[in-house]
Image (tube, each protein chain N blue to C red):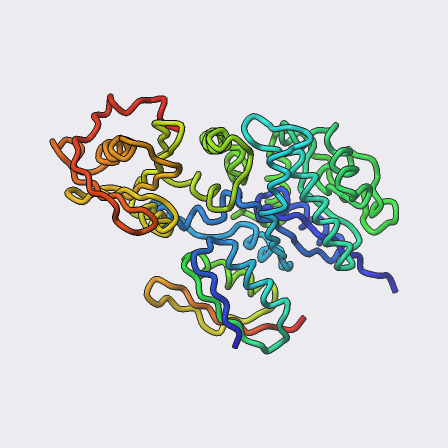
Length: 74
Length: 347
């Protein structure tokens, strides 16, 4: 599991950070992104859907938004 | 067997870029989207700041466009590179601080670089001749093609029939007869095409998707540069221009007064970078002081801050001043009346 801290970043920066991290990963790898902008709860899943990645979990804990992504093929 | 040609589409999240990409998909082109984040994008982080905006859907329209089209979207951070575009626009600014023509040249150029690196054949945009007063005119179309380096690999599917043939048309990768001849500011042809494609939930941004076309924002940016004596900015500077009421009662400092709870929370994140003022005896906004202070400045700032607290009519309001997160002073002060807040201070 790769951890990515995207706290204090506003959308779309957490999406960009997740995208750039995933570029260095391979299919089946997992990325957990921790964010403070609630917009990520919509934007990261949308970006993941169109780029073929799977959201394993998206949760809010103490005003933080934690999303776990499994990297897809390609 | 023919090779499937690949186009990268500039996707803003608006209707035109959505349609341009759709027109290409209908012709069997493999399309992927690209979206550039300059820091000035209206639909970026702004919805996360103000509490009143939280009721609105937080949809990112570029992502929505890509999902609607069923294409990939690559979002590129160009915050640093974009500074030169904004600070030194070769073609100047539009009505406000919007360097639209230079911006388009820059973005098409970046898309061209991306296309070259990723084996894409051409670039498409949703530009329409006459749609925008600065960047989308008949005279500017060849400038964008040439200065971006895209040349005849730049295709504008919505107005291609009004322009010279491009490489994808000459080579037969796309059928020019099935491209369009839209022109002018009317949106009717786009809306009709959207209806034909069954698209009815597209974004209709008023005044574009960039804060630099906004007069009030542009005034704040000009004030920032004037106060620093040079044109420069960091991402935090341009974020803070979107938040709060701004007052410059003296040349050496500016106040950013939160307007509501969402902005209060947002400004909290900056309390270790700025002098902050907070009313203690009455409920009131968190305020950032950007600049330096001289004798009497904190009292002047406190009178303004107190004016925006619930103690605005009180004889005395207690204001706590902190620097980099540490309390340095407490001031008990009578708030300014509305008349005492000079109009010239408002940025």
